[in-house]
Amino acid sequence: MLVAVAAVILTLLVTFQMFSVPLSIDFTKGLDTEPGPIAPLSPNFIYVPRPSDGPVLITIDVQLDESQGLELEKFVNELRLIYLRNGAYSWQVFADPTRKDRFHVQIMMPSWSQYLLLCERITKAEKQLIDQARSLHVGGKPPETQMYIRVNKHFRDSSSV
Image (tube, rainbow, N blue to C red; front, side):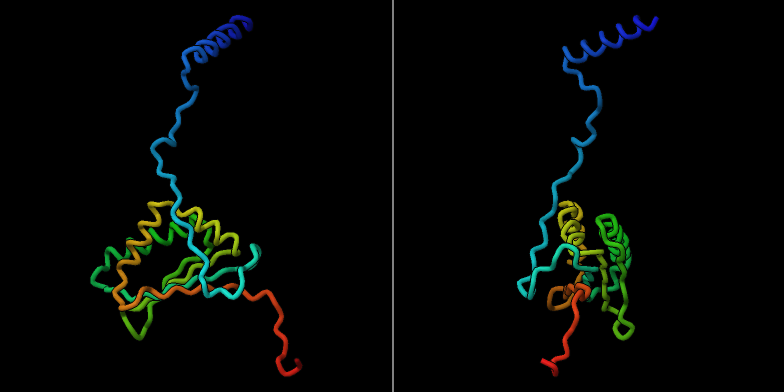
C-alpha cells in the first residue's frame, strides 16, 4: 500500500515537471509593489544621523479648508494607517485652538534607520495618496515640514570653554 502511494506521488511529480505546471499559485502578479521615491536628506542638515539615532519626530503644519471635512477625515485615517503600517509608532493630528484651519501632524519613528526604511516601504500608490492629502493645503506656501532627532550627546557649558 505504501509503495503504491509513493508511486502515485512520484508519477504526479514527474507529470507536473514534464508539463511545467506550477505547484502553487502566484498571487503577486496583480500587486503594485513598485516603491515610491525615497525622501532625500534635507540640504539643511548639519550632520547625517547615525542609524541608531532616534527617536525621530516629523512635524507637518498645514492649513486646510474645513469645508472638505469628509475628504479630510478619509485622508487622516488612511495616512495614519500608511505611516503606522510602514514603521511609525505614533501618528497624531492636533488642531490649533486659535485658528480653525490650522493643523499640526506629528509622526514618531523609533530611529533614523526606521525612518529610512519607512521612506523605502512607501509604495507608489501610498505616495500618491500622501500627495493628494498635501494638495488639500490651502496656505500660500507649501506645508511646513520639520524633522527632529532626540539628542544623544552631552552639552558643554559654553562659559567653561
